[in-house]
Length: 258
Ligand SMILES: O=C(O)CCC(=O)C(=O)O
Ligand SMILES: [Fe+2]
Image (cartoon, rainbow, N blue to C red; front, side, top):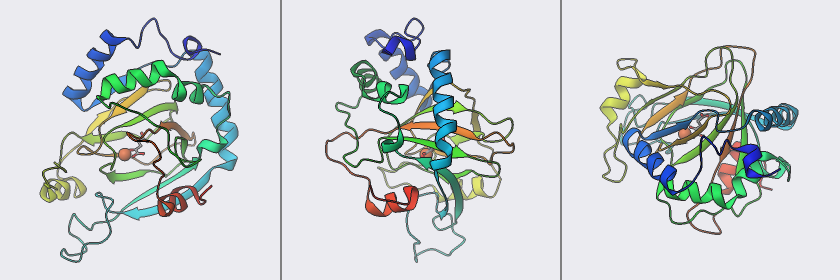
């Protein structure tokens, strides 16, 4: 299999001109959705592979604040800095993704990495140094969700593999905080969690590649309201070599270190 078997290169040439137009969209919207990025046959392979892997997935649920920070005693427990939301999902890790999986070919391919570098402005991209964190496949069964949060990383790349019949909406509000300026915008987070403001909804279908800047744009995936499991691949890179996901994060999300 080669890149053209996986990516629709006629529609998405991954060259400099295309990268420039993607950068413009990402800068303007904070998100870039490329529908049908994955060729139909490769998507079918990914769906089969992901369905087969689900029995090995590690399922867990956590309470966390939207800032993914530990409780802050300067604030009351019901303050937006401390309010707890729940995230529940299953995950299979990089070491269970087959060597010949289209996901791995895509993740490793220089043309794809060059495209991601151009689009995000990231000068370097490196795989995780630990054996678990680079490519993950996430599963959300009925009732499972990802609670409101801001990402720690500056961008995330996902590929939707299977979409449930109802629920699992990706909801977000662009640039709700400014982390680098230290502006946590507790009032707006409080309004959102109390249902006083309505988020935007990002539409995506299986085969779509999504680049999302989630550091300042709060987002969640609402509960799956169907019996069809949501399956999504996460392609994670670092801007320097040798980075491992922390042991505590690996234990929490994967249930193991290696
Ligand atoms: O499941 C998704 O579409 C988004 C995942 C996400 O926000 C995350 O992993 O931080
Ligand atoms: Fe996120």
